[in-house]
Amino acid sequence: MKIAIFPGSFDPFTIGHADIVRRALPLFDEIIIAIGINHQKTPCFPLEKRIQSIREAFADQTRVKVLTYTGLTVDFAREQQAQYIIRGIRTIADFEYERTMADANAQLAEHEIQTIVLFTKPELAHVSSSFVRELAAHGRDITPYLP
Image 1 (cartoon, rainbow, N blue to C red):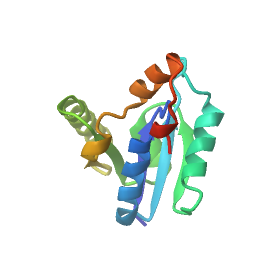
Image 2: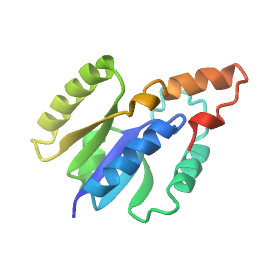
Image 3: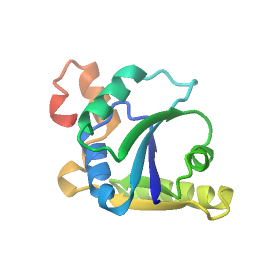
Image 4: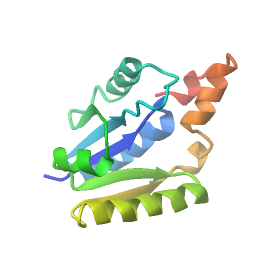
């Protein structure tokens, strides 16, 4: 069984994130959307709201699960018996960061876990969680950017 995790804080989970998951579904038997909990950071959107919105977005997909984790992503992937980590890339800066993380995770996992990169659709490249948080902070409508 091919299991992948799609890790992130998803604060909030955007239409860009949802698009990556939907395009990855044909590649895997199961995708775990893994919300990382960093106790050093204060999220903008409550954890329960993030979980609920993701579950609602994928209510029609039995092969998508939503779980939370703390610690290293690669350790969580091992716990879930996932062989793949899915990452989305919007920009060159994202590529540099994700390449470094993929290399580190491969080494930590002794190359048992591979990172799969999907490029964001051009029309969604401007959508990021930080962009949506900024809009929300200024009282703007964020619903066009949420699934």
